[in-house]
Amino acid sequence: MASTFTGDPPARRRGWLGRGAKLAAGFAISALFLYATISAVPGDKLLAAIASADRNWLLVALAFICVDYAVKVWRWQTMLRGLGARVSFATAAVPFMGCVALNNVLPFRAGDVLRVVAFQKVTNLPTSAQLSTVLLERLLDLLVLVGLLFATITIWRVDVLPAPLLHGIEVASAAIVAALAIFFTAPGTVGWLSRWAEVRWPVLRPLTGALLRLSQAISHLSAPSLLARLFAQSVAAWLLEGGAFLACGYALGFAQKPEAALLALSVGTLSTIIPSSPGYVGTFHYFTAMTVAAFGIGEAESTAYAVVIHGLLWVSTTGCGLLLLATRGLGVALRSASARRASLQTEQGS
Image (cartoon, rainbow, N blue to C red; front, side, top):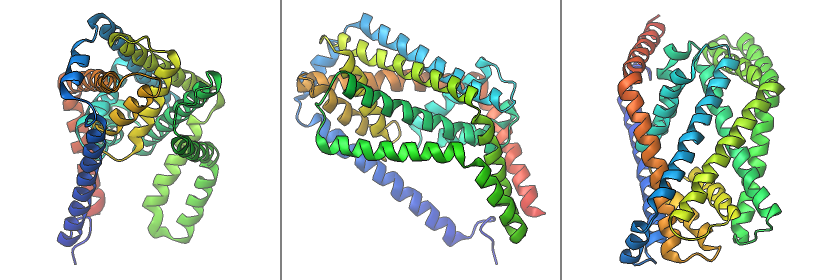
C-alpha cells in the first residue's frame, strides 16, 4: 500500500483540488472587493486623480517605506540573535525581503515557507525556531495595529467607522490578546504535554519532538527584555509606515490629518487578514478607501489614495525582495531546500 509520504494519487488529487479551490476563492474575493472599490468612480476621474500625485511627496512616502522595512528586518535579526543565531543585518534582509516579495506574488504564503525552511543554512536554526520568529512577528504586528487603531479612536475621538466594523475589530482584538497570552504563557505547558505524549505514544515522537523544539524556541523569545525591544521596534516600524500613508495624502493634494492616515493604515492592513489574492488586491483597496472617504475626502481621491499607497508598498517591497533573491539569496535557498528534501527522504527511507 502506497504511503502518503510517497504520494497516494487520490490524496494528492484531493490536496490539489483543495488548494485550487482556496486559490479560486481568494481571487473571487479580491475581484469582488476591487469591483466594489472602483465601480462607483468614473475611470477618467480616478486616472486623473492618480496622475495628479505630487512626485516629491511620493518620494517622501517611499523613503518612509524603505526605513519602515529596514526596521522590520532589524526586528527579525533581533529575534534570530535572541535564539543564538549570528546573523548580520544584510544577511537577514535577504530571506526577510524575499519572503515579503514572494507573498506578494505567490499564493498560500509561499514566502513564509521559504523563510522558515529554505534559508536554514543562513541562520543555522531548526525549523521550529524559525517558525516561532514568524509567529511572534505576526502577533506583534497585529497587537501594534490594533493598538494604533484604538489609540486613534480614543485620542482623537474618531467615530467615522461603522458600528459593525468596530464590533468586528473588538472581536478580533480579543482574539489577538488571547493568542498573545497563549504564545507567551503556554511554552512550559506545551513542553510538558509533548514529553507526556511521547512517553505514552512513542509513534507521536516526530510530532512531539517538533512541538517541544517550538516551545523551547518560544520560551527564549518570551524574555521580558527581548519582548520590550521587539515591541518598540514594531511600534517604530508601523509609525514609519503611517508616515508613508500621511505623505501619500499630501501627494494627492488633500491636507490629510494624522488620525486619518493612522486609521487608514490600521484598517487597511488588518483587512489583509481576509482571504484574497496574493498582494491583498481588493480587500486592502476597499477598506483603505472607505476609511479615507469617511473623513470627507471625495470618492475619486480616496480610491486613488488606496491605489497609490498599495502600489508604492507592493512595487517597492516586491522589487527589493526579488532583487535580493536574484543577486544574493536564490542559490543559498535552493541549496538549503535541496539539502532539506534529501534529509527528509533519508528519514522516510529509514
